[in-house]
Image 1 (tube, rainbow, N blue to C red):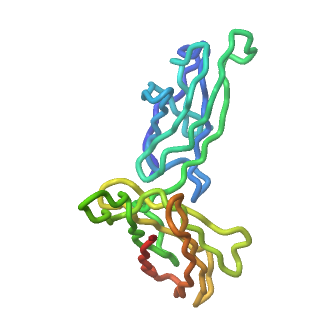
Image 2: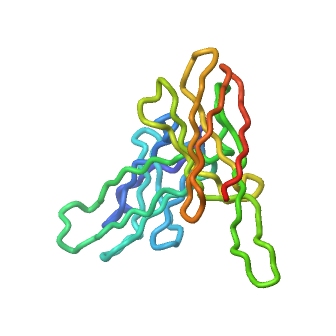
Image 3: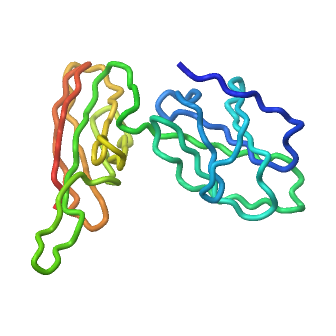
Length: 208
C-alpha cells in the first residue's frame, strides 16, 4: 500500500526539478516515499500521487547530481542535471525507475533467492584473504520465455548483504534458468537452476 504524499504546490517552485518516479517491478508508484538527493544531500520535495512526480524547489543554477532513494529499492543511478539561467522551463522534468532490493515485498510467485560470497580483501603478509558476503554482484537470469535476461545486484546492507532476489514472470510448472554472476576482480560464474511454479528456489554461490 502506497503512502500518502504532500501534493506539489506550484507557488513554491521557481526553478526546480521534477522527477517521475516509478517502481521497476509494478511500473506504478513506489511502495515507500522517495527522497531526492542533490549532490549527496537530501532535499525537501513535494509528491503527487496522481502524476507520480516529485518536485523540489531548492535547486539553483549550476550542475547537480540527482539520486533517488526509497525503502525496498536500490538507489537510482546518478543523473547529472545542468540548470542554466537561459532555461525556458521553470521546472525541469526527468524520469527515474527504482529497482527492487532483496527485501522488496514481492507477491507470491516463482522466485530465486540466494547469497553470493567471495574474497573481498587481498591477501597481505602473514594474513589470509578475507571472505564473506559479496555486494554489487551483477546477477542475470535467462530462460526460455525471457527474451532479454532479467537482472539484479546483490545488496550491501545489513542482513541482506550479499543477497539477491529474482522474480520470474513465468507460469510453467518447471523452468530451467541459467544464472550468471559477475563482478570486476572476480571470476564470472554461470550455473543452471531448476525452479518450480509458485515456489522459491535458493541458490548460493562463491565467486573466487
